[in-house]
Image 1 (tube, rainbow, N blue to C red):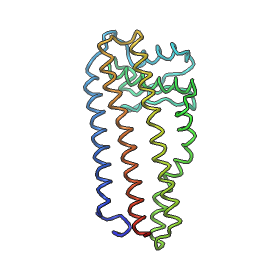
Image 2: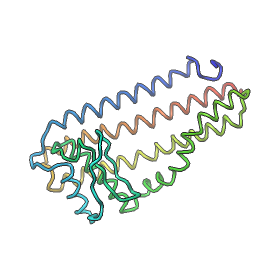
Image 3: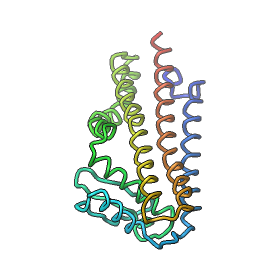
Image 4: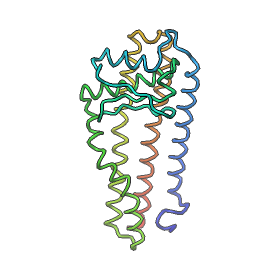
Length: 232
């Protein structure tokens, strides 16, 4: 299978680079969260308190805030209009927890204002689910069938949809963080000297999305290089 790109050929270096970037980003976000999770907010507000304040200030009193299990499993669900905060965020009064909660509120405000990149990302979800599940099997089947270029090409295009989705995700995440920082900097949740700490936490979190996009793009490049060479 070496000729089909599953051995340790030169293009395998792209996978190693992508893996290294992803591992570093994961370490960096956890390092920063743990660091600033030790700083208790001077005003004593919890992640849930901050989220409720931000949502109410934005006219989103109807959005329910739920506590969910796990660590950093926080998310906003536009389907049922709920804000889900992890156990490590909901009750915590740390600067890091408030920053994470504010970020998820940013997504809720994006939904309220019909933020275009968020709408585009939502529209891509069905195609991306298909691409993530079917792309690699199609490529493998195409390779096993004597380099069936039609199946391989379809598989690569489906994988490209995953890359597109992750690229579209970047402005959504950065914008949500920007909204969170703006709200926390002008509200009654944090003191001025605590806002830079939140910026550091949210910047580290955003880097994980950048790393994922780069890693997936490198995988796509490897597929193009490997199977393009075989086709030639």
